[in-house]
Length: 176
Image (cartoon, rainbow, N blue to C red; front, side):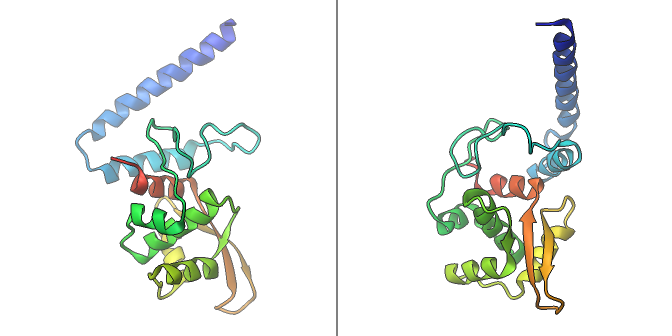
């Protein structure tokens, strides 16, 4: 290993050790607090991986997900929904968006599509736009609106989950 590569590896290891020490401050804290810190960190410091090889397998495929846990494979949206067991309308929209974006591989999804899928599952959402907006109002944001087709209040909107949204759903479905 060259000297520069060794220095980079040493710096990387030192940084990981410092992060682990900082996370010890949250030992004993509810999982929600620890997850919030991790989501914030990922959103704040994650670099674009558009030109890099993915560090982990596609979501929905059994295998490492970055923290040593496994993300189960689901054959249907209903199976994913049952495993995640979302209790609120925003969380139901989040899990359904995860299905379309990360399991089916769609780059984005529409509110109409999510609402129809939720109705088919027996969990209709009163106002899908409000549910998705609630996800965008969380800190960190779990979903973002990409575009709006039309000028009316009922115009079709397109959304995408954030990295924090992906992590939130994986936290719901990961085997304990």
